[in-house]
Amino acid sequence: MRNVHTKIRLLTAALIVLLPAVMAQAGDDLSGKPAGQSKESPRFLFELKRQATDRATVGETTSTWIKIENFRPGVVSLLRLELPFPDQRTSFEGDPFNPRLGDIKTRVGFRAVPLGGIPLSSFFEVTFPTAQSEELGTGQYQLSPGIWSNIPISLTALGPTNHKVSFEPLIQQVVSVAGDKDRRNINYTKFELSLKDLWRQKYRMKLTAKPVVNWMQNGDTGAVAELEGGWNIHRHWWVDLLFGARLWGEAVPATYDGRIEIKVSFMF
Image (tube, rainbow, N blue to C red):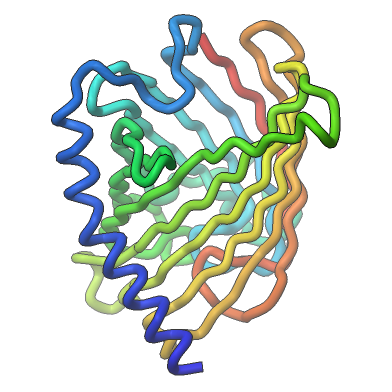
């Protein structure tokens, strides 16, 4: 087990070291576009999300979220603001009419660049300890670099061509850098391994495994699995429904026992 944890640490360190190089390479080519972006791609996204979460760690309780994204054509391809409003009651049922402010998140994403023929995107996220009570936030400022990719999978010989299937791996390192001295420090690595199917540009299905390694607990691991389905109900509107459940591990950050989520997105 120690060898596995050592390999994960080395992989994480290598990716974090690689991140500035990826950003620099993106800056050298100002004529490119973010992965998947075209002239008809949306520039803004507004999303309202409601989550009911059972037996979750701090920051993953039952809540309502507002997300705003700006997709850009330059080196900086994404600006994101996430506003969480966790229920004061942290049970699965929660209390949707009695929300509180949680820890606000911001993200800056950088244009994808090819690395060995694979498009590689990077981002940097900052979390602010704005939660109004200890149960609803971490009490820590958090910095989080990450790298992800979108790799198309050809199924021409196996199925209809109107299905666009892709594999989307992500790795993200989260560390606390300041905040309440009486609260726990944060240092964990999160992976996301997603298989997504977009059908006729109208329906989508995504299956994701999310393993987490918590370095504050001697490399303890946990994971959840999520199945999400979406429907483009109108030209600019998407509705998604998600079900999530724990695969293994207890008290590991970013994990929970169960989750049901519905979200409505408007893109233009």
